[in-house]
Length: 450
Image (cartoon, rainbow, N blue to C red; front, side, top):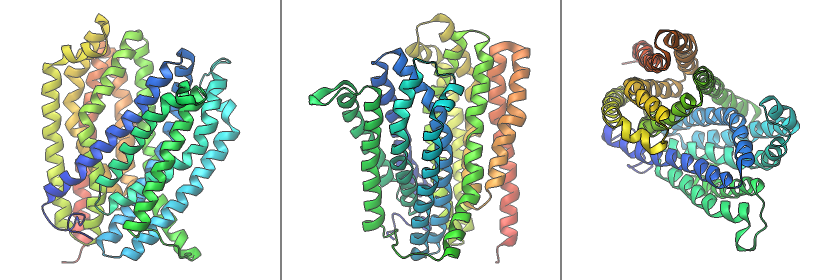
């Protein structure tokens, strides 16, 4: 392993920056991919755009579990690389991909057989349902091309290389941006396939990323083995991944559930409140993307150093990351509060929407820093094999504390009370995660021989 990719030596802040910046590019690439699809499909008409919107909840549920698999794979592979056991890392990478294929196949079969009732349950009417089904029939088969490179890229990141996965994702965005108009509208002699064209563009672009990921894993990283494992070895690896993946995947569903509840509460005030929440949430995502990237960087960094027994470097990484998260949160709160009005005006010209977005930007960013702390610690706990504790923090934050606080906030001060409750939820979640992490690090130190 080159010194650049070896996360067990060198400056801790520098290594975290080397990981976080490319990961931020990768996150932005994923956002751009969805925005491009939405832009072109929106030109087909309201029905097609509505049909695409109906697919998001299903895709979100499936992708939550795929992300869980990626987190589990990163934790295992990074530890083995930290232990300088490349053969074990290759075995774990190969078995992770095999497990991903198996679980993806399960989702595809269930999804295809439940297409009609699923989207009827979600509220698709007789005009929209056929469009949803024609898109999802292709998307379900494309799911193999989405899930496998996601886990493959997680394995590449576990080696300490965050750049290659980021460029692979950027490549997918570029290919999708080229193919979308060609296949949707029938340019350059291609048939105009409408919504199906968007699904096919996704399949082709993701398929190409799968080829790239496998090429890197096989040729450069030597992290794919063609030796058939014993049943015990395979079962052991799958059990270790699922131990992290299942609670992590389920915990990731808590946030969209909570978001749906908040949206429903805000809907009682009118469309302007829902629109403002949507704008505020998008601004929040952009402002916090560096914190998401930092949290994602913790996985490979902690994995390698935990595997090699460098607990002091793990502590330093957490200390640096937590301080940065709090500082960045305070910085973005000040900037968004000062420029709330012009920022809100960029997204909408309705006076009620602008005013409500301003309230969002004055109040909610107060909790951004500690929400970033929670993300960092959550990633750390998953990596050191404490996924249940990591998941429980999110469940307690959003469902036990957050939802009741939002109902109380609504009664107390209306929309502003809801936003205040959301900020308080972020702060409390970060505080709980800090306490949990402190206890966990004490236990690790006590169990580690001097």
